[in-house]
Image 1 (cartoon, rainbow, N blue to C red):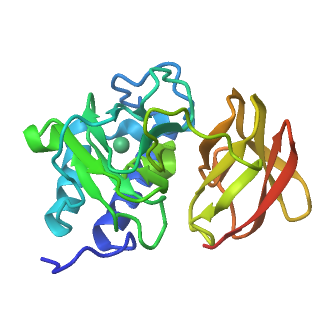
Image 2 (cartoon, rainbow, N blue to C red):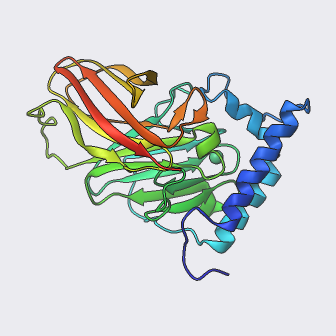
Length: 284
Ligand SMILES: [Cu+2]
């Protein structure tokens, strides 16, 4: 038994990865993928190939991980300010099953609950492949018992907190973001003084995806796209009509469904106030 949590590059994790790869191969070879309750509107199409594994298999993989790396990072407190429903195969906080990456917005000191709905999953801080993934929190979300059906994390520092599911984060884009802002008392959130990215991309460099925050000084359409170093557009990360204020999003580190190769990428934010670009290094 390991004494302390270790980063993702661990024997159990590689096992999960190789089993998923095998599942993918067998489903492509003609075996009927066992899709259990996957929402039809979920954006991770290639993801469904991965689920030739049964619920019981996935439960065993998640149990094996937490046998070697104890769950941590939860906090008991009053009612959480927001909740992610943990489904096959997404973290849902807005009731729209097709939205790619859901974001919960809370203020400092508030909690976010992860609540089991279906399948066997984890909630793990960070991004897939991130060396310090799970350093803030890491817990199973499954139907095993009361403690795995609900898990609450309290956020005491403002910032952007990406998280993912260990078995489904990388291959099925089962990721989410918690955006924590300073608390305000009986006042609407102050209008940001300037528009654009707030802080850097996290993590950067990354081994997977990256989360970001940005501010709008007035309501309007915001669009974030990914480009490679030669300026070729690789994909759309976010395209939404938003209010003035602070917003968050995340790129899952994938291009046309496959993991982006090592190299330099750019996230370009277009907003009513203009355009801004941030550089992101992907390592493999
Ligand atoms: Cu999962």
